[in-house]
Image (cartoon, rainbow, N blue to C red; front, top):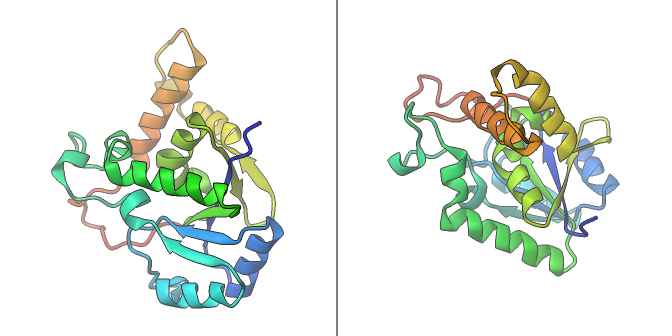
Length: 205
């Protein structure tokens, strides 16, 4: 098993102390914020400045990787034919590749890292559908922290993908192809569109 373990977590509607307790439970000492916009209108305790200061008092480093791992893009070259963000195109950018390299360097320095977005359920978040699958294919092991202090593996979420989209999956000779197609379908369902009327709506919690 890979030793390059990366956690993910959603801030959801947690109170700050409860959120810090979740991080401590898994030994996380570096939180990487993957929100494009590191702010929450409903939960201001998770605005960048407030969260960074709070975590500093808990000896947890805060970093914002919105440029590297954020999912809200407007550049035409990163959109699909429907005007939604194409996760595969994002993964090919130098910014994304830089983010992966920085994660690897942080782990090599001994940090225990969690990627944070807003959604409680990783299945509903780009931290799974855009980031985690790529990391798993490139030498990382991703573990998703849930509200009740349990973990889901990326394999469990991929099995959930297959179950959700099984009627839309083409017959394929390999499980890998089935999973890849299911990721594409999930991309379509959760991707941001700069042309949508609800672009200011906060992510689910």
